[in-house]
Length: 326
Ligand code: ADE
Ligand code: ZN
Image (tube, rainbow, N blue to C red; front, side, top):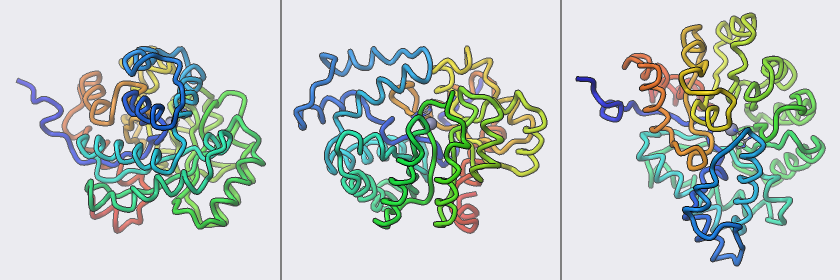
């Protein structure tokens, strides 16, 4: 008899989760009522039923629309707390959480309300949820990079408690090189650097994120398998890849979990972790992702432990803190 995956779930870090993407339909309706915002669905079940996506853009359209309910510091605090409660149940012991400052600034929500709402809850996360956390400000690659640079300067001037920067939203047509100045400024300011690359776009975006942005970590990066030379490089350099297999299936970047390149990435010796990305939208928190890949690829206990260990070693924690988790 095989042991259910949940019985032996190893502790892990989650390195790739968008806090706005953790908004459950029930909380969306609660916040909509609190803020007098109308959602174009009658109830949470109808909103959840709309989570059928053709590609990344069709998801981003709904994701952006649902975000309209997030208006106050308390909303961002409630959102963050709800994620931490669920992540603790998933066995998450450390979380590196992204937020999209531009998505809120364009709607007139003050930057400090967003940052204070999220960071105020993260400050108490270790004590209240047993999860250490780091916060990442992600910039929209389909907006002008001058806007990203301006927002970065505002975050730095406010001494916002961020560990690093990321790059997300629509990938195709917006290559990493557009954001060289933003990443150079982040590096100069001592911030860590990750970037979505090779999710819907080509392997060249991964190479450019490494070479032009000095990205230390790659989010998704599944296109790497199209470029054996690049695979050899990221294996040699042990570049962490935060892979989100269920997200990739739900956004049709791959046709089915069975065809996902995760096993090839592991087999090649890459430093890969598994992550949720936007859990309610894809119907899977990181424990569900663990169950799904364990079943789809018949992963051994050792392979699952290696994925969990890579989630800590691919984190932005200092080496002594990583060692304490391994
Ligand atoms: N923002 C939230 N989820 C995303 C994803 N999977 N790709 C790009 N941007 C995102
Ligand atoms: Zn993502």
